[in-house]
Length: 252
Length: 248
Ligand SMILES: Nc1ncnc2c1ncn2[C@@H]1O[C@H](COP(=O)(O)OP(=O)(O)OP(=O)(O)O)[C@@H](O)[C@H]1O
Ligand SMILES: [Mg+2]
Image 1 (cartoon, rainbow over the protein chains, first blue to last red):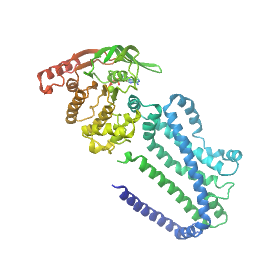
Image 2: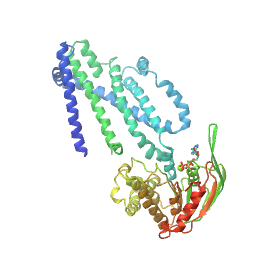
Image 3: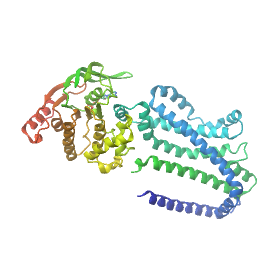
Image 4: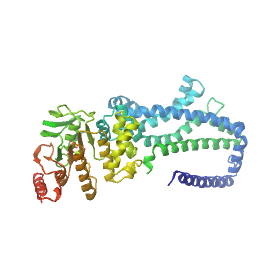
C-alpha cells in the first residue's frame, strides 16, 4: 500500500469511528435529557462560537505545557534509560532507586512542587515531565537491556566505538518500544495536565473546563472537553507520524 | 596467519564456572581455510570469538599475524549467524556500515559498496530492508559488508545454517568463490559435515564441551572442480562422521 492510500484509508476509518462516537453521544444526550450533557450539535456549535475568543488561548497554553513536558521528558529519559540499560555499573546504582520511586504516585508531590517552584508554568511542566519521564525511562532501559549481545559483537568487530554502537544499534532498535511508551504516556500526560491546571491558574483547558462547570455553562464546558480531546488526538497523530517515518522497517 | 596454542576458556559468572574450551592448538596458513565442526555447545562460537578478539583465552595464547587479536582490527571481519544485519538499515546502509564506522566519506562508501553489491547480485535491492529479502540474500548482504572492508581474515559463525538445502549449496559455492577470489584466509564454523569438507582446507573436529581437538584433517583437494561428487570428498565425509560419532 502506498503512503497516500494508507492516509486515505486511515482518514475514512477515523471518520466512521467519529460518527459512531457522536451517534452514541447523541443517543445518550437525548436519553438523559439533562442540561449537563448537551447534544453533540450544541457542544460543537459552542466550540466554534467561542474558539477564537476563549478556547484558542486556553488550548494554546495547554498545548504549550504538555508539548514542552513531553519533549523534556523524552530528551531526558530516553538517553538516560538507554545508558542505564547498557551500562551495568550505572544500572546497579540507579535501578534500585527507580524500583522504589516508580510505583509512587508522583502526583501527590504537587503541593510541594507548587511550594518550591511557585505557581507559573514551570511547576506544571515539571510535574507532567516527572511522571511521563519515569514511564519512558523504564521502557527505554528494559528495551536497551534486551538488545542481543550478538548485535553488539557485530558492531565491535566492525571497529565501532561505544557511541557508534548507541547510534547505529541501541537507539534504532529501542525506538519502537520507546514510541509505544510515549503513546501510552500521552494519556497520562493529558490527565496530569488537566489536574494541575485546576489549581492556581486562570489559563489552560483544565481551568476552562472547571470554571465553566462552576458557572454551570455546560455547553462551554463541553467545548473545553472537545478542545482537550483534539489536543490529545493531535499529539497521538504526531507520534504516529514519527513512528511511520523513523520505524518504517517495522511496518514491512 | 593464525596460531593457537593450548587455548582454554572458562566463562565465569557469579558462582558458576563453565569450561567451554580446553587445550586447543592449531595453526592456519595465510590464504587457506579452516572449517570448525563439533557438537552443539562444544565451544565453536567461543573459539571464533577468541580469534575475533571479542574475548580473551583463560589459558594459552592466540596470535594472528604475530599479534594478539583485536576486535577493532580492520583486517579481520566477522559474520554472525542471525544478528549480523540490522533490520532498521537498508541493504545499502547495512553493507556500508563498516566503512561508515571507519569514517569513509559518503562518496568513497558508494564507490566501494555498489560494485560489491552488484557482483553479489544485490544491485536491485539496495533500498530494501533485510526483512524484504530471502535468507540467502541476507547472508550475501552480510558477506558484502565484510568484503567492503577488504579484510585479510574472514570469520564466519554458521553463516548458512538457517537456509534451505538448495540455497545452502549455492551459497557454499559462493563462499568458495569469495574465498578464492579475494585472497582471504577463512575460518568457518559449521554444523554440516558436507559444508566443512566443501569449504575447509583444514577441518578442526571438536569434542563435546569442554571443546577439545579430536582431530585436524587435511583436505588438500578443497575447491577443485567437481569435488563434491568425487570419492575423496565422500571419504572425508565418512571419516568426519566416524569422528563425530554419527552412526551411518
Ligand atoms: N557469554 C557466555 N557466558 C557463559 N557461558 C557461555 C557464554 N557463551 C557461551 N557459553 C557456554 O559455553 C559453551 C560453549 O558455547 P558456544 O556458543 O561456544 O558453543 P557452540 O559450539 O558455538 O554451540 P552451537 O553449535 O550451538 O552454536 C556453552 O555451554 C555455553 O553455554
Ligand atoms: Mg555457536
